[in-house]
Each structure stands twice: as C-alpha cells, then as structure tokens.
Image 1 (cartoon, protein in one colour):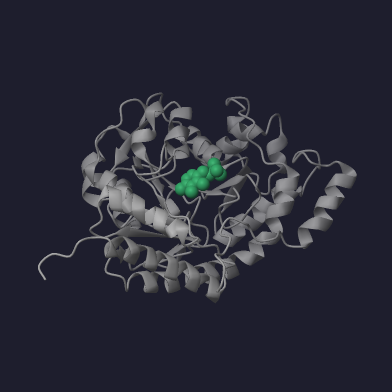
Image 2: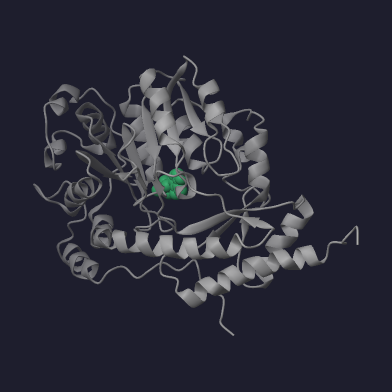
Length: 397
Ligand SMILES: *Cc1c(COP(=O)(O)O)cnc(C)c1O
C-alpha cells in the first residue's frame, strides 16, 4: 500500500541559488542598497516585472507589507473605508487596520468567490479603495469588479498572494487592478521563507511605495526604473523600512524560471483530484469562472448535506486515512474565519460566507506530488465521506 504523501514539505531551492548565496556570504553584501546598482533585490524587481508584464515592481518583506504600502501609496485619508472579501487571510484586514483604514467585508459565495450582488450593494460612495483577495487562488469576476470600480474611479488592489501564474482572459492576475501584491512565504508557489512584491504601471504609486519601503535619501536611484516622481516625493513621506534583503532575492530569482512548470503541474494535480472528488455525491469542487486559468497548489471543496457534527467527523476520518483536512469555519481560532478578526471591532453577520466556511474543506496539493500521491489523496477524501455516510441510518426502505 502506498503511504500518505507529505504535503507540507517544500520543493528544494534550485541549485543555482547556492553559488549566489555563497558569494553574498563571502562578501557580506546583504543590504539591497550597499551596491551602487544591480543588487540581487533590484534584479529580482526587474525580472518579476518582466515576467508579469508590469512596468514597475517593488520587493518587500511580505505580501502583507506590500498591501500596507499599496494602501499608503494611494494617499487615502485616515479611517478610509476599504472593501475586502470576507473570505481571506487575517493578514488582509490587518494590513487595512495597519494603514489606518477600516475594512468593510463583502459576502463570498460557496464557489469561494466574491458575491457580486453584495459587492455592488456595498460599493457605496464612501468606499475609497477595494482589495480583492484571490483567496487560495480563486479568481472572482474581475470583469464585473473592474467595471463597477472604474465607473466610480475606485482603485483596486489585487491580493494575488496565492495566485502567481493564474490568468484571467489570458492576462496575468495581479496586473488587472491598479496594484498587484504577491507573497514568497513558504506556502506559496515561490518560497523564500518570507517575502513579498508589488507591481503596478503607475509611476506615482511606485515612487511613493519605494520611498516608504525604506529607500532613504537617494537610494531610489538604485531601483531598476527611475523617473521624475521620486524627486517630487523626496522627504515628503515616512520611511517604514519594509525592505527585502539580498539573501531572499538570491533564493527567489532561480525559482522564477520554475513558475511555469509549477503552475502546469499544480493545475494537473488539482484537476485530477477534483475530477475524482466530483464523482462522490457528498463532495463538490466548484467550477472556476470561464475566463480563469488557475495555478492551484491546494484544493478546496464543499461537503454536501453534512451537518456540523458530520463535518467534524469527516475531517477526523480523512485524518485517520492520512490526509489532513482543514474546515475553515470549524477549526479553532482559524485565521480565515472572519468572526475571529476581533481586532477590526464588531464583525458584521455574513450568513453566506459563514455557511460556506462551515462546510468548505482545504487540502494542500503541492505541485511536486506524483500520480500515486494524488490517487492516495483522492481515495482518502472520497472514502472518508463514505465512512461518515455509512454510519447514517437509511430511511424509506
Ligand atoms: C499568504 C497570504 C497573504 C499574506 O502573505 P504574507 O507574505 O505572509 O504576508 C495574504 N493574502 C493571501 C490570500 C494569502 O494567501
């Protein structure tokens, strides 16, 4: 019998990183602004912008800090109201609070995407920006979102932390809104332990974000693209020091050529397991929206017709079969359950998002898994549902 795959281990970092890390350790050149030009962090910014088809990129210490700097660079007034999906990671409302703004939560449906009726209703005149979290890589209806926001000139920030490699009508996710933010934390497609990057085509936004990230004095001159907005913002902005260091860039850069392969493998893995799960009457993997080409490294599915007790029993049955299932709304103090975000003050009641979170299951499915691993995962998830259903009394026969 095959063994349960380890879904937490990362892929090895490409060999090419070692020589560069060794060089940096030899010279001690770890700070991005020591070298007069072409530091590893600056090279990463140029390469990432080219990969995504964006004009500018700024590498920082995390995606959360990229979101924070994005909000600051929009020049929003204190207490500005920011629309965010109610299904996201706690770091997103946290970035809003960090930027002295107030999150307004929008319902998310059981297909894990923003409910567009609730979005339209909550996009009132006092909303000053929108963050769309493509949570677990699920893309909401960006056509409808951009049409509504463009009509009111409300800037959209894409939280693409978990969406590197996803496309919408063939366009890279993260380049649709005014700003796109990505993560290099270990559970994302490119792993540096920690790290983040923001991309934009807006010269005024990138100049502000670069200065605020900690390009003190004239260090902005060491970034790949220099323009006249830096002179304008000189000495007018606080320095939050959220920079990336050279070792992180040395770990990330050799992974960029791997992205296309990881995306392809992740999609193959996901689609195979999804096809198996969808054959069970008790499990449902929502379809992606037609313009979306996904880049998944995990799978989410809903339990059909299960109550809370059966849902908990399902997670235990899957665990007994070697696969850890997280039910977002039922695991204690889950950071993706909006009612646990006590730091934003009183959270509104959002029945649709709540009912989704109570039945939505989350299983990691890294791109490196092989066919026998995938068969093991699919079999465990389907069999666990059968275990629970077999215990239920059958009526009417
Ligand atoms: C991981 C993640 C974040 C936070 O990224 P960090 O780099 O850890 O700050 C934000 N949003 C989403 C959707 C994520 O998956």
